[in-house]
Length: 392
Ligand code: MTE
View 1 (tube, rainbow, N blue to C red):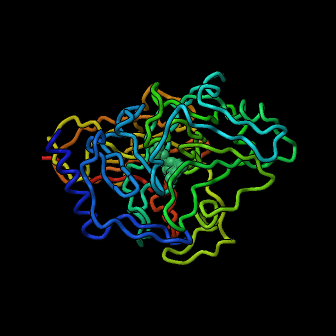
View 2 (spheres, rainbow, N blue to C red):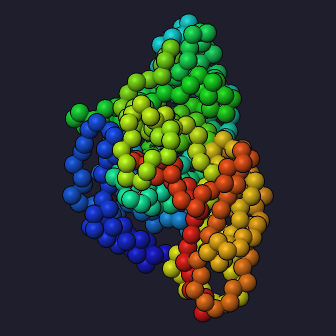
View 3 (cartoon, rainbow, N blue to C red):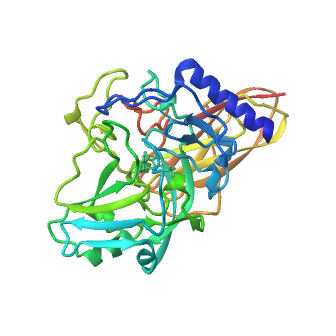
């Protein structure tokens, strides 16, 4: 394990050295200096790929995407700025205000008196796979692993909003985190439509896989907006505000928007020709065998995970001949509406060079495309996955 971990650290250090270092998406109206040095010895993050240690962005190696619930130390981390330095459960408060009958301030103990609900959710960063977009786009060059799955638990957002009294004119619900934002960086604030906020599966999550949230994942409470891009699920939640219209802030516009029409790769897109990204795409990844591996002829399990945001996975197909023929993979028995399905296909491999592909289809009839929709911020990459292997 040690040598593999060192290997991964060397790979990510090398990637940083050759210029795939984290930098920020141009649509955001601010820039930050790149980290000069990477601290690669991050305690408790066994084998994770460091995409930024300044703001702490960790990618899950693809071979870890092989359990239905991702252990918390292997769950990817995405921070836009600094995590709050001081977080004390006893002092933490959540304010609920805006267009409500009665503003509230809740302590963690008060939140804990509300009925807890659990949702197994696959959380994926909108920028997952950005590093695979061609032509390349700026932003953190995520590979395939800015995605993980956990059982999130906590009170329903709906129950808190109903306590405060929602009005008929309410249209959006805004979340603010406790991030420490340097200089002119705008705070990480986003909003979701009231219908999604009142969905019984939208939570104020305090727990992940049965334990209190860790700091990296939003301790002591985060929004959990299942099936939607990770950016909707604000960590270190401190304020909820009900609004008559969508929150107008940097992370709603120009950030986290997708072109209404697929642009020509490399073309600029006007802000008025974009919309806010909500639900995730249909997607699959191969978590084994790994790209570039040398295998022995015989039975080889091709396996991975597939997810579709608010839709369900209905089929995963595997090709062992670069797409000439496709075979249906077996889906794992563990399933939940917003969670990925593990899948596997038993391949009887003879010696040769192979390109293995995986392609998922969902309950909305969406299928992974051969080519992703290129867009200037590299969001929602979901091309058919591929690995190349050699069988001896
Ligand atoms: N919440 C706050 N307060 N600050 C952030 O930077 N990042 C968002 C979201 N919530 C972010 C946040 C993004 S872009 C993603 S993908 C998810 O958190 C990642 O959640 P995780 O770090 O628990 O995996």
